[in-house]
Image (cartoon, rainbow, N blue to C red; front, side, top):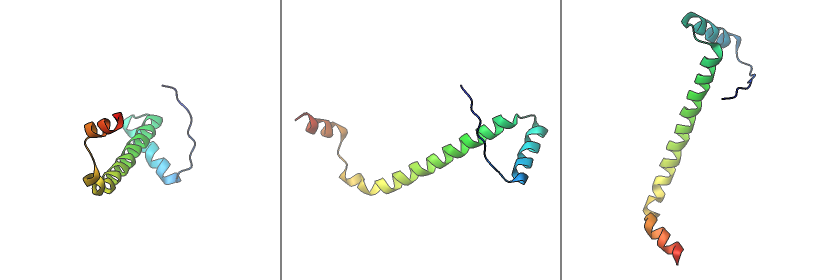
Length: 75
């Protein structure tokens, strides 16, 4: 996997806490930040999926079986 640099400004206290946390536990700083970003992205994407599901549920009554849809397309 190729790597890139991601430069962001964060509060000094947050950066200090993260660095201290990583140092005390022997975790590489970059690894920790990368995993934290991945987890947050997954969390946000999951929330979006749930919202899509919730908003689509009302349209479920209008849905047709996939096989019926394919048959109509073949005509």
